[in-house]
Length: 200
Image (cartoon, rainbow, N blue to C red; front, side):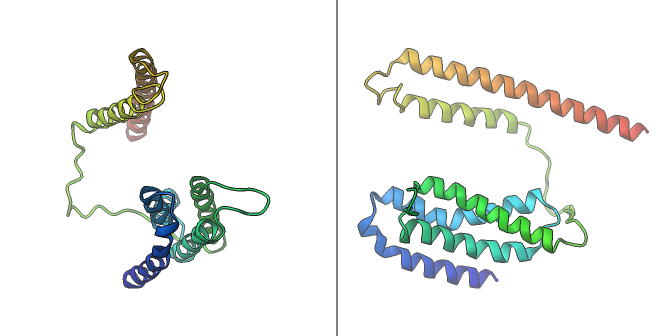
């Protein structure tokens, strides 16, 4: 199955290659080409994680359908559906929903007899990294800094200023703090519930 998927991917890439001359820019073209492949794969992985009774048949159907659907909608129809013109990023989101609906339909019609259970084989150490939370918040902060500094309110905007950047980053920091507190409260409630259940 892996070799077949690779062969299909190569054929699709070869078909897309002539559109380089007509693209708005190489970066946008690469993003749209990756949307043909990456988003369908991400959708299959996400549904597989969320739904434990979705069979492999759902992925076999949704993956090629999703790839072909986005290719036709963007590269053939140019996002023009007659009554509405849709940007390619919106097509990505609609294609995601389209693939999820296909997989959920297959799951409803032909679910797995038993839900999938992940078995820990002790082959890989899965001990949580003690700095994972700190690194995660650092990444969020750096992304916020990057997008704020180089946005319209930052150094690239005519009305940009350091004060606006600081205000925006302060708002992001407050939101992150609130989310962090809510997550901590939720995890503490879960651990308390598990402890009570074990005692019972």
